[in-house]
Image (tube, rainbow, N blue to C red; front, side, top):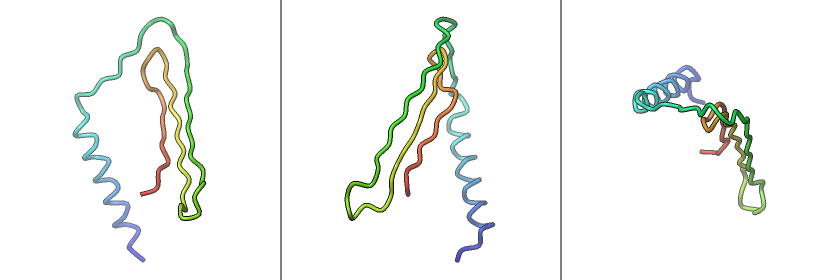
Length: 74
């Protein structure tokens, strides 16, 4: 079993690398319409050889993403 401290350090390095690469990105919100929209998608296990289900969601407000998650096995 790998040292959980090492795993967490590698995860932190990945997050920091991602943030460094996206530092110039911006979220632009439209003033109108102020509508909260939500989308979701999932793929449940349908194949006997497939052992993972995937799912995700995305919420937008005024055209800009306010919350999202994707659960995809690595």
